[in-house]
Length: 361
Ligand code: G3I
Image 1 (cartoon, protein in one colour):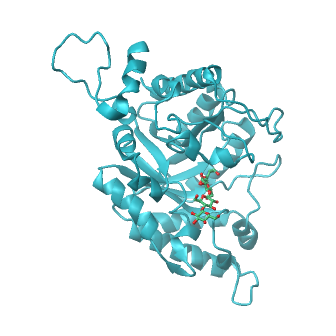
Image 2 (cartoon, helix red, strand yellow; image 1 turned 90 degrees about the horizontal axis):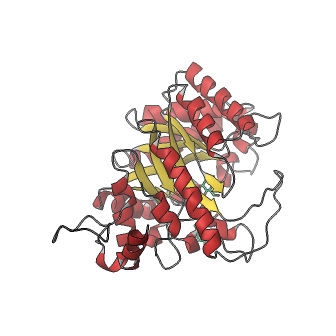
Image 3 (cartoon, helix red, strand yellow; image 1 turned 120 degrees about the horizontal axis):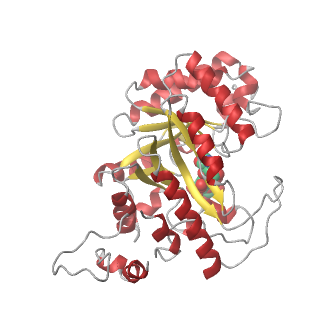
């Protein structure tokens, strides 16, 4: 650990350093520390980015540690539109960067109850459209978007977060669900996606699937998709974890249930908040606290146990993606006004945190 910490101090400047301070062979420069490089035989290592990050000082940090990119926002339905016309400019900046740097690109996300333009659900008079109209609009969106990125996106989060959080409900009561009258829109979305690009990986993506009650709902969805002959590749576990939840036993239980259905798993949006805002399942925001050495060490232990688990799923865990590069860019800083979080592997200066070294094999 010490030699790795020494290395980190010069990491950005040298971009190459001695992994072990006692390296005796003169002139052999071991490769710079790299997350993706360390996991190249296990799973791809991604990072969620906005296009603005691609022209800043963080480019070497991105390209040396990751081999996959997810658009944190710019490939969602609403940001792809200027009015009712498609404008792929921002999304193409991300796709071009990935292509130029030999990185994979995850498509996130085609159908989600958030960031769908309002006009999708209403007619010219502002009245709610019928099921057939919504179905046609979904088909156009999925076909247009997937055609645009064909050959550049290797896996799509086709549908995101359609399972209900409330006990006793399987399906989220989204506008898609209400207009369709049932969950058939999910089947249509996957069918349109497969028809648009039979080669690309098709994923279902959601959060808190490690909760046994929500896992049961996921299995209902999987069985429905299989019954309809949908060639689902796997399930994305978003991985917005805290220091204490979910335990690795719950993660393993959920992974194994999905794998038992003949599917792959991926961790699609990994971060580890230092706050405990759901002490009894109800959002009760914790007061702000400094990310001091003690907290950073607890977080490092947590990342260490998570990546130790991930390593045991070789061949079944396809991708791991960090939901952000540096702490100051995390969506979690907007969770509670005025409260900064530090959930990622690099600090605001782009320096690797103790968690980074514990995430390495
Ligand atoms: O870029 C525009 C800017 O031009 C505009 O002035 C500003 C005014 O609101 O909005 C900016 O867009 C924001 C965008 O992030 C880029 O920063 C949106 O408002 C904001 O809603 C959007 O938040 C994203 C959120 O999804 C909604 O799309 C977060 O960054 C992103 O981390 C979060 O990610 C989601 C996953 O997609 C799905 N799983 C949960 C996860 C966390 O919510």
